[in-house]
Length: 309
Image (cartoon, rainbow, N blue to C red; front, side, top):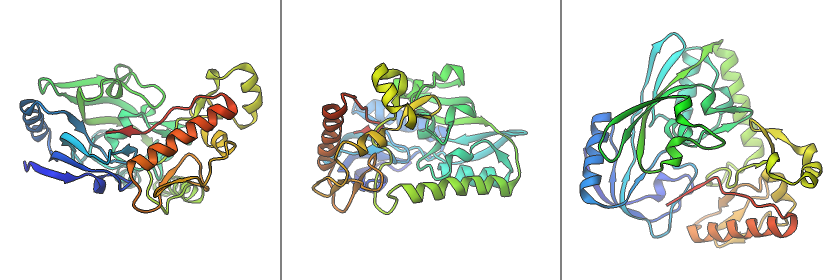
């Protein structure tokens, strides 16, 4: 396995932002993943596990350590309607596979960027669906000793954009997962996926680099009774009642605000886009501006959905 030095990370992020990693490894098998872990442990340097880079804000200074980007990219039918998927497979290719094999249940993820491993780690969800809904079990490799751990759905401790793998960040690397789907008709599955993709293109600023939703939606239960009454008409299930954070941000007078090459998208205010040559510091300025504006105007604290290194 090739160990590369001083690799620019901007090319591995949808944002096209970020400095370099001291060391960069791309294991293609579980065996190579274990080798990468042994190298990382021996170096005693910080480790970061990179997935699809679709919700990742990389520091302008880069990462003074070892970045491991698993590229375990495979699909294996275990039994009828059960498929094992490598963590390095893209969600896009997973959906293509479900169309080919006429497996339904993941259509909600149409247009969702990133890797399957990343979707599991953050329990990605949209359009009323979540990754956890179809996961049977997840296999990971423990960093401290290279041991393979297999957990069932309940043991993964999935929550709102959360899982045990996110809670134990850096302690384990997801290798693969088994998904349970259901029989479907290829043309219907494909149409449903395309509908989600078209919706994203119509509502989201896909023409500029971004890392998707910057902030989490706001759980209705976290608001005061007075606030709940104010926003009840815009509540949606995600998969439990939430107030869309984009709605709140749109009322906070920050749409179109810029810092350097970054901008709060006027098309979808929960996206901070790279208009060209944006730096991580520009994005951070806008994140702070949005949070402060929402608090000052509505007394609501919003929380980032993105990952930073």
